[in-house]
Image (tube, rainbow, N blue to C red; front, side, top):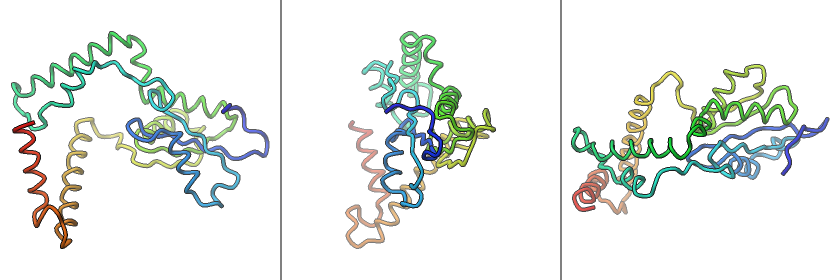
Length: 217
């Protein structure tokens, strides 16, 4: 579709920004339009904004299959320098290859650039303030956009935005803790059912499966 200034008296635009690793902004916008209450949709137009490298935007694909396989197959329980060496080598190779393939374009795939893209969307639509919905990485883009262009921000929904005061390593530990809590909740729910296929201790069964896979991949 062609995106241009909203005509006078036209629908109120709402930009929907998706997640880099999940449904794009366009997909989120379609889902929202299909499920939102009719009174909310009246007089409203959703615009899906795909982050760079997602949806119809050319994706970042600069890692060779063999390097990607080495990254994916790295031992998740490795902790000492010797065991971590294959992962470190694969990560170094991936970084070197992407730098060579993408060159200066590599810096175009950043949250700050996505925030500038969103401001361009607002200008193109011709509205003083843009109403926005952001999910996951999209919420992070909205947070950056709001800090850079506070006068452009309308009503805003942030779903799953990362805490901007935490470091990458802190967020990684929080994701690990959340995964552990999810497994605990799953095990508790399954064991409470009389037909739980994993028996009275589902968490131990899952741990045993992983141990077997690690021993004989």
